[in-house]
Amino acid sequence: MSSADIYREIILDYYRNPRNYGKLDDADVVVRDSNPLCGDEIEMHIKFEDGKVKDIKFNGKGCAISQASASMLTEIVMNKSVDEVKRIGKEDILTNLGLTNLGPARIKEDADKLY
Amino acid sequence: MLSVIDVDRVREDFPILKRRLKNGKSLVYFDNAATTQKPKQVIDAIYDYYINYNSNIHRGVHQLAVEATEAYESSRRKAARFINAGEDEVIFTRNTTEAINLVAYAWARKSIQKDDGIIITELEHHSNIVPWQMVAKEKGARLHYIRVNLEHSDDGSLVLDDIHTLLRENDVRLVAVSHMSNVLGTIIPVKDIINVCKNYDKSIKVLVDGAQSTPHMPINVKDVQCDFFAFSAHKMLGPTGVGVLYAERELLDVMDPFLTGGDMIREVHKYDTRWNDLPWRFEAGTPNIADVIGFGAAIDYLDSIGMSNVRAYEHELTKYMLSRLREVKDIRVYGSMDADERGAVFSFTLADIHPHDLASILDEDGIAIRSGHHCAQPLMERLGVAATSRASLYIYNTKEEIDRFIESLNRARLIFRLG
Image 1 (cartoon, each protein chain N blue to C red):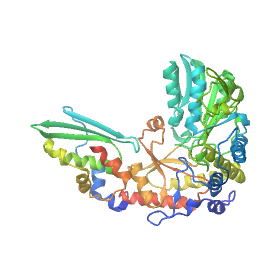
Image 2 (cartoon, rainbow over the protein chains, first blue to last red):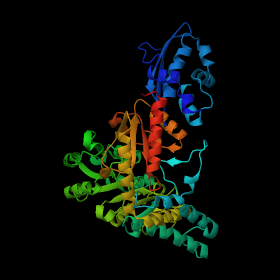
Image 3 (spheres, rainbow over the protein chains, first blue to last red):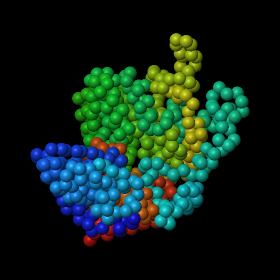
Image 4 (cartoon, helix red, strand yellow):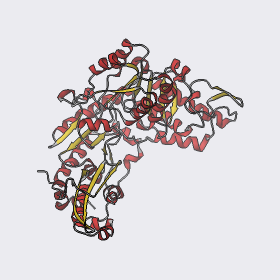
């Protein structure tokens, strides 16, 4: 994919105006991961209620794809049951991002780390 | 046009510069601070060794062993001459990191005691930080940092006054300092630093990390009067897997061996061993013979150009690069904007484009730069950024390539919808 295809308006919008950015004071789960190769850092805060994701926020630092995909993921899992969340795979995220055929350097760093 | 080096002729010697990348673009290689490309003379020397005289070295009486030993030791003579050291003061290691670790294990662990001071700087590569953290923790010694100036015109230089304070307030045994920053390009006045330290207390040892300076400027360890000097072959046209530690003869004489086993011994008995002479005492096991021989060819190549010419050419490239970078909107360049004070390593950020995204866009245009923390996280912390983009140049780079690079930066601005 060329850069013009990767960095479409929607990705830049989620990068510059990330949805669900921040922290939850009453989170049930906080997961943090980083990628030493590119310095990406992502922290997810999740609050569950009745087996569903009641609220979710993320924060961190990273490239446009990593930040946009993290933000989109929070929207995808919101109000979903834990079982539904577990079934979400890398391909679902890439589809949401409108990305196919990203090089291995980008996929590894930007998508796999979310799981 | 640039005159000190015939760059077209130089480029002819580097086969990789002719390759086309997957989208048909020609290569602009601006990642020389990570590793440099290799001229065919170096590749041929390695090939020649394996084809014609592959053999283990030292103590062999057959012709191949004699030839291989002579080629290996001739690289040592070349490396010694290149930095104005004695032949028995040049130890081959795997890389700069191993050279620094050799000092940490064989000298520092014996010579540094509880509460002693070790001084390093905020702009060091991790390879000149972590070994000293380890020594400090193990010995109960104290690690101190000389700060980096990040204000205006003195961007990227060291706060040299810190040295006086640190020397006064601590029982300093070792100062370990980079000769050129791999992030900011700053050339550190190591001779002045060493003078200050030695005037304060002659017994203070100074290690200079020359990984980024040795490829780009004339080096004279006797003039600088450092006790240890470390650098890597692969950043100066040589192969990977070869580093050099220079240490003063008197120091090597009293140092314990680092790795032990074959080749570093004079006599081995069942329960004790006599060490070999210098410098072989510090080269245990079969060394990286082929690549050391290749390194010799790299030194010959640089010698044929002349290190003053290398520096002069890169100075011209640096001046041009800085003037072109100034034209780019929303760019922030870290480090000095004065070509006299720096080498051709340029760290920068462009608006809110993450360095990783920027490197991807440039890669699409055939331009290889690096993005990330450049193994200098304490410096990144000081700069207040998680990552930067870094372009680093060498003798085969041209002004035309700088133009292509600037054009690509402007394309990245458009892709990120920056007006």
